[in-house]
Image (cartoon, rainbow over all chains, first blue to last red; front, side):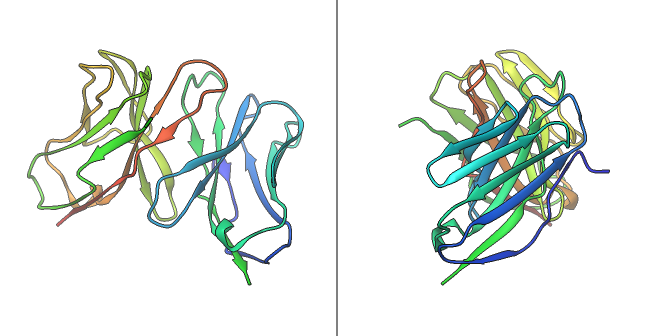
Length: 112
Length: 113
């Protein structure tokens, strides 16, 4: 089992819809969870982080964390073509210090 | 402007020819790290450094070396590159403390023939 799993996609949503991206992790003791956006050929860019169970909202983005189910998700409301990118889930494992373990990413396509 | 820089951005080389990819940050970050990104495998950590003269192996350190003689610089050295080191490489840095997270450089695309 991979430490951080994501569906590779592509996930296609129409413009204006809600995009839902999911991630599961294996280390039950993980404490910190991150979402990075990566445009093709570019470097990953941090868009959200969440430490506690529940929801965290920032603009059009909402991160959701359920530690009991070892599941973290990212919702993007009012999806725009500029949101088309690969979204990387990253987890800080137990005792990992500054280490991040990344999933392989989900490709999102927002269609006009 | 706060940033992480890498050089070169693109490099094509031959097997066995030593090379260095430089990484520099201007944010006075303590933590720096190197990753490689390959299709289907995601980002994997090669080496990291907690501060000057403190380095440690990540998940895929074989075939790589690093050094941290100055806080701002963290070069990645390939003593004898092989084709399986063809990849996209990212340097990242981070300030200590919760709430500060890793910021990535622009990437170096390396091809070893």
